[in-house]
Length: 444
Image (cartoon, rainbow, N blue to C red; front, side):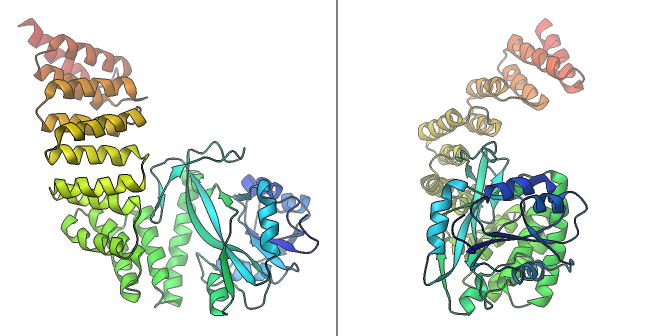
């Protein structure tokens, strides 16, 4: 234990038996008390919590995360409070860092980096792209990637410090409003909830949507509240028109809100309104939102407008911000080819495939480049190479490779590709029809 009566673990839970044990195990020896607010569990959550010595507070659920968290805060006695969710964990190896924070004399709270583990390096959280997982913690090392954000999760127990916001709640506002000092932590929280089952995530999305609507009613002039609901509509429900309206409202309430401008551009780009998307994206960049995601979307937008030179420049900027991203390198290569830099573009496309040989999208982009250059032999070879490189090629991949060989008069090669495709997809009628046509052409 760090110091006696010094750090309380404060949580709210409901039906959290899947992850709660790992969470509490990660805090052993680091906290002096555990106070858990249960909002109506029907599984083994409460018994698991009690086995770790937790004090249970029954908290009636009122569709308000802040109200629930504040009810638990009132039951804590330690000098400092650490807030975790059941699907979050600490790295016990960071105990020394945590102890140093608790000895701070003037600091009242810490913004803590939260590593949200996800199932693909292509995911993002808000405007932050995923990164390859480099953690050696046994409970999280199986996840391929994570996306990081920050929230105030460690703070002094002080009557001025309280959670605000019905959803996406935080104590950060109350700390700043009281004129208290807020610092950035150098330890991390590990969160696995974003890698939950599709059913669990769908249930949470519906809850966050409903509470987000209530939050806007209660805080109609809060730009952040409109922005948060906009992300829910955009990412979880593909409600582009509503998301666009919410992002525009957010940046009208706070014109200096670069993320709101950026996601206005995202919504417009998804609606294929590429000319309209340019201005908000460029504004976000000028306001300081200079990450790879912004530059990549600018590149996509320029490319879809036929401005290939501008697209290549934007993608090169994105590469400079995320040097190991093969998708961005591949997009840069195709834009360069379309802008007239054939050799350099093809080199970028090939090097992207070397970085991620099993990524079918990269092969498709190289193929597209060769088709645009009227190099059908190279295109056919690329299409066939994809069949060998990706783990589970689609039936359309076999059809495309066969069609390219057929155009080149390579009927035996076309037939061979289709026969392999039929072995994998014996019921696919288009493959069977294609093979019949090739054999008929070969016999004449």
